[in-house]
Image 1 (tube, helix red, strand yellow):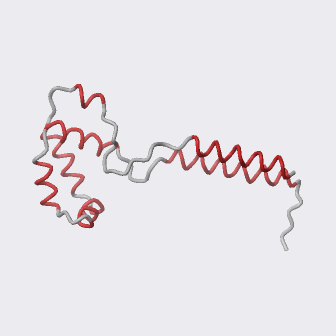
Image 2 (cartoon, rainbow, N blue to C red; image 1 turned 90 degrees about the horizontal axis):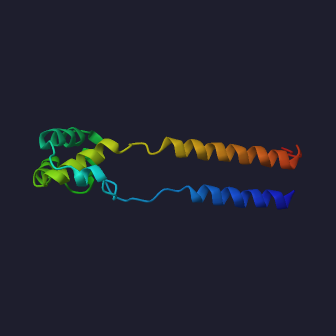
Image 3 (cartoon, rainbow, N blue to C red; image 1 turned 135 degrees about the vertical axis):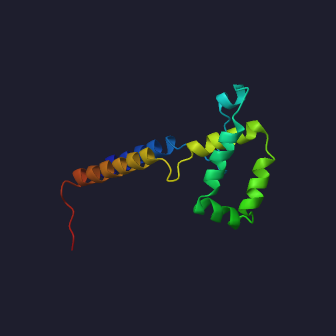
Length: 130
């Protein structure tokens, strides 16, 4: 039973690693939205309101302070951005998920459960707990 188990574990490892998404280490995703590039006019007031609402979050405010940036300095930097940059920042803030991707966690848990069931099946009930 060792060979089928090893083969299954190899296939499971390859399957888990092939679905990994791109790693992005920044506040906003690196890919530019096509709508941001093609739009001619942006509502700067609404976008600034979205950004300022996000800045009121205690978590984001603490994160900015960890980087050595106060809320007033952040607002000053945001006010110096162009209309397109403010719109892109506001659009990306609306699409950011605080907890990450739930679907990926569920798929991983399902695969782990399937592996446990397969291991128990391959051992044919010969598991002894002493």
